[in-house]
Length: 112
Image (tube, rainbow, N blue to C red; front, side, top):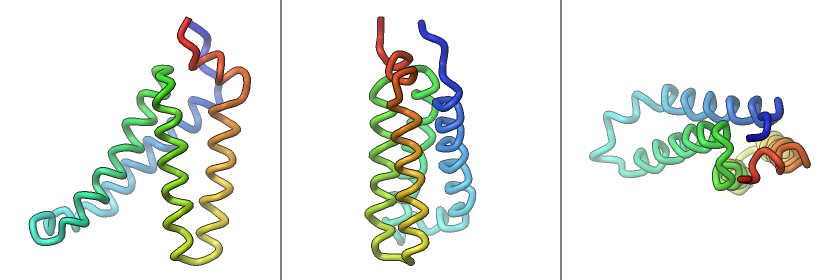
């Protein structure tokens, strides 16, 4: 197995932390899960960040695609928010793509 690049470790941990912090941030809303089904979607999106981060650390190729899709989703929904939020998510997406798809990361995610 190839050694995990630092960029993969940092990005994976960032997504795990973002997912966990999102769940904590929205914890009060979880009480409304029966009356507000949108809360389920919020929880699922946060859990996907955690799952993607964990499995990217384990060198599962599908997980890096999940992380890119997760941040791309946030770029899309940022179109409905401030331009600063859109720019921030776009920059994070570019950093994520570079970190997860540079040659050393590609070698790490390649099953040999």
